[in-house]
Length: 132
Image (cartoon, rainbow, N blue to C red; front, side, top):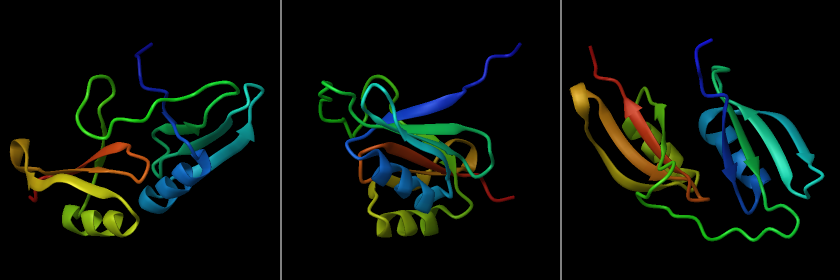
């Protein structure tokens, strides 16, 4: 069996607001929304193409999360999303509260890239394939 990524999991101070932002920004679908026995709200989402599950959860009972890191850092630094029109998507995501960190600029092989972070500080790379 080949290994594949099953899901990405984001911790958030407000998992519902985070999930709703990704629903608005990238057409995610909310699959489930529950409070687990561990006391945290846990929301499972699916990407528009049904290719990846993305989970959002809050602090568990007694858990205190440190502040997140917005810029480049060790660990899971960002995830990439394909964009058909990177300039329009930067404008649209900015209107939804995202912040542009870098770009848009030319990337490897003629693609365009831009880095943004969501209102919760989740770092996102937009990637527009080269025009043919």
